[in-house]
Length: 91
Image (cartoon, rainbow, N blue to C red):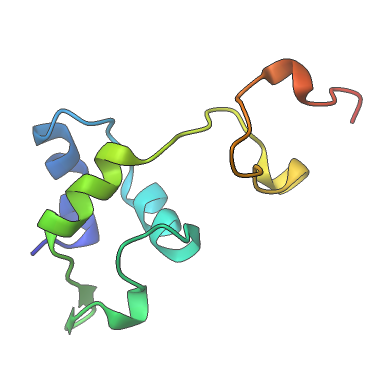
């Protein structure tokens, strides 16, 4: 079982892209593919606990879209490419 603060070092040990605690928490709150809803994760004191055996495949198989501005353009459509030229630069 791991907590949010322990996850970046676990990612590094698994030779996966290192993410900040804040980004991992954001993924847990917003990504529909996150394996376990936050409200269902066991809580010890103020810390949520997650089974790393469930999270590790999520991080390993997660598709990233570096540079995609969800605040400006909304979430990407499923099955779209990462073609930067498709983004309107006039805004």
